[in-house]
Image (cartoon, rainbow, N blue to C red):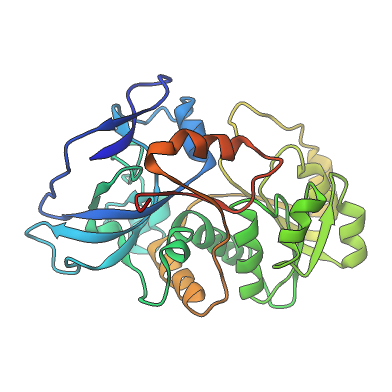
Length: 336
């Protein structure tokens, strides 16, 4: 089968023919219907993830169809359509036992310690799999584990209340455009912030209000008291995000930002305004199940900016780097 391989640390990627995977006792082989590209994939190619074991198949967002299961697998069968958590927890530690397996100290990650999903087929631990509801499309499923469910958990962690105003930066991107929809599904009014008028047309389809430009805090305050900011951009918008917040507001810092980029944080400002700055990444299995149901109910709709074949993976990276024109998620498909 074809796969996108990282041969070694900081050695780029190759598209190669590799042997078809075989399932272990607690594993399944899935035909990859669609995978999704994430900024984390770009950072990984650049070598920012030291836990990665090489050679490695890249990609951590997937929807697929079960083709074969191991002898100890009873919960899944051939033909089941599934998506996966981004990692495999041990399901026995204190965090797993209380339903916060995202913090499992012994978790192993797909596309780091385990092969990922930019391939025609993939081997997965069935303990990380979630069945996709029949009425949810492949596009609707693939955006859930790494994006919609992650945002869902972040907003729940921030204690979102119905009727609050949520501001989303980078609102046209793969995370931002779905974060708007998750916040609205949870009862919020949403301000989408984006960099250009062409992107504003897309954002306006989902957000209640749209602000264009780098200086957005005054415009946001005129709309109302912003309780939560979903910050997808990082150091380039964080100061304006803090200014946008009401006193006692919260910023959910989301995304795989370049670890080498820093920000000069004014601690006194955070204290005087009583702001909570939350780092956030990841979702638990229950978050994925609940968010898939929001997709099923039509409250979250996948926004796909581009879809390319596995063989054209390089084009997908070019699209990811094209911040001026990029919007929504970029999918990698085997169906071309």
